[in-house]
Image (cartoon, rainbow, N blue to C red; front, top):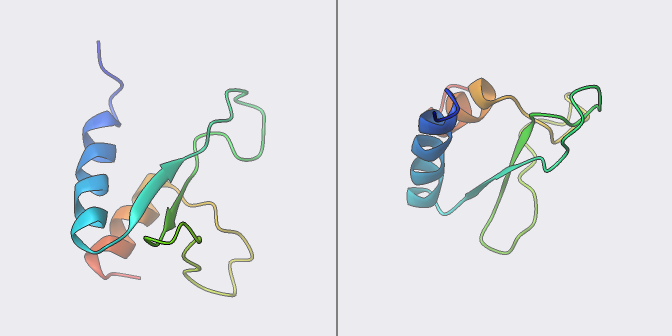
Length: 73
């Protein structure tokens, strides 16, 4: 059985690729850890994309990644 968000992750990765970006998923496997289940975007040079300075973190939810790629944030 596939993880329910895997389809959304793949769709986000394809959308990011069309925009010259990459989607990365946290490798943290401890559900109690701060970065668990989070994502971030990077440019082709590998440097993280900072979406807003107010956030103070590069970690995003999958919903936030999708919204950014759609131009909603």
